[in-house]
Length: 358
Image: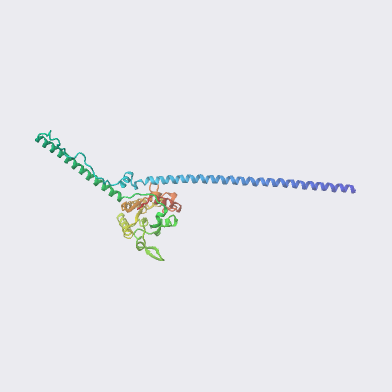
């Protein structure tokens, strides 16, 4: 009996050992499987991240190429604002100050007394040669006078006309921007942080000079008063959409002329830029009323006529964001009236490529 119990105990021990061994073996297999699964998940995650990174780089490249294409198109459309090649040559053409040397104007004289011709023949010859020389000299003098006159006119025209060129952001360190909410957006974009801004949301062209919107040391003063206190080398204006229902084109032109006169009186040496008002989206317009792009384009053209291309220049800011029908493209706006902050870079890029340097 004792021997049977001992055999039974030995059998139980062997079973326990076998069970423990199986558990250890299954534990090792389970750990190996879990480790393999974790590694598989990590590999899959890494591959997914690499694919996303590649897609972002591809999209970035496409965006950059599209931006470059848009910039090229903008510059191509604005070629009519720049002075052409022939006119540039005219600007730098030096004035001809060398004296002219008329040729063959001397009257032939007889120097050989032995072969002196008959008196009558000599008189006729001298008379004919003198007349020819006189006619030639008159024609050359007339030609010189005409050339000199044309040259002076060309030089005067070249001096009065200036050419757009490309500048850097420090060009705007002494610039002033005057306008409504669109100009407020430029201020809030911080893209041209060195410039000054006299702007207010909702303000119209009839109030821009008189309304107190400039903070001068904690005291609010008008734009007209602020212009008497500070000096600027460049002044940019975009105004008119908020009172598009007020008055007609003649009234608008007179209001704009008042702004230009005030700036010219207070900033006599400044370059003034009239910026075309950014259009509205198609769905925002009131085609039966006044708030539409047709009326806005009429006012843009009225302000364009005020640019003399000597000290006042017109900038086609409206065309940057417009589609083929002249409406604000939906990709640039959320409310149909204002440009989203990310797209003020297009405006700034246009200004950098359309600057006048004295």
